Image 1: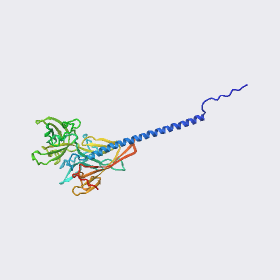
Image 2 (image 1 turned 120 degrees about the vertical axis):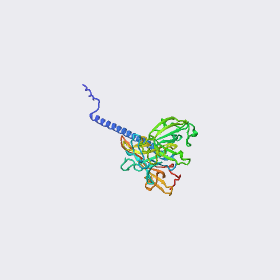
Image 3 (image 1 turned 135 degrees about the horizontal axis):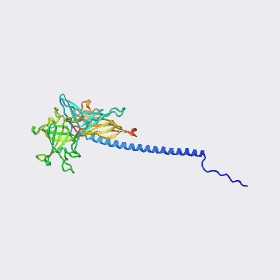
Length: 392
């Protein structure tokens, strides 16, 4: 009698299943680890590329603005602002809200003592040593820099100016190009200067205007005055009896930047009522760090308008300045205060040294481990009275 062979049931033993599971977990874990490292590497590369792009854009914008300090405003830019008994020192860093932004406050224009009177001045470049906040405790307080140039895009210089009252200026555009100011050049494709109320480039409250005027009753050799005012209102007043298209621009007192002080003894519209001449809109551009938000931002403010962000995660700004004394021939280099401690003024600056414009990365909302730092120099070719840049 034959015996049937025993049948072995299919499947894995417990040991085999345990080993297989363990191996599977190891393989999946390795795969997850590789994937995670790949994602992190992609994030780091993307973050670095984005940071470099932001840094490059911010550095290009700032160095371009600095290189235009004093442009189209003549050599030796030094314009006296309202001064005298009862006058307040004009400020920058505020908008029309009004809100002030430079380390949470405003900054007063630099002053000089002239015949016993403290006179504030607007220069083509204004250093701001340690005016900014502390973002990195190890680096210390950051700097601020302000540059001034004439706006050549808006052809305000094509209008004839009359200072009607201490707070009102009339701008008139003559229909005959030959009777417009001599420095009026209308570039193609424009056929005529833009309207003062133009929606794109026209005047708005917060704009700063440089008026170059003289008293017509004083003769051909009448002295010319440079007066800075802050626009508070603009109105189209139509066509006058001579066919000029006219606009009434108000420069009311108590403006946010304290430029309009009609009762000031000197440096205001109240001192030149009845004068005629020309005008230019000027750009007073300030770069500073705002650390009221996280991450901190490099900000750019123009005149009395609301600041705009330039780049995030900028953690430090530091500048020094090279100067040349026209009278003595003395050369000063790398002056953090713009030469003020040596008795020199900002219109003697020949070079701006960006010692540090530092950016620190952020990762998932927290401080990262990457950083960039700009160190370069920019020529102030439009600031100095003499075209003299000594080498050493």
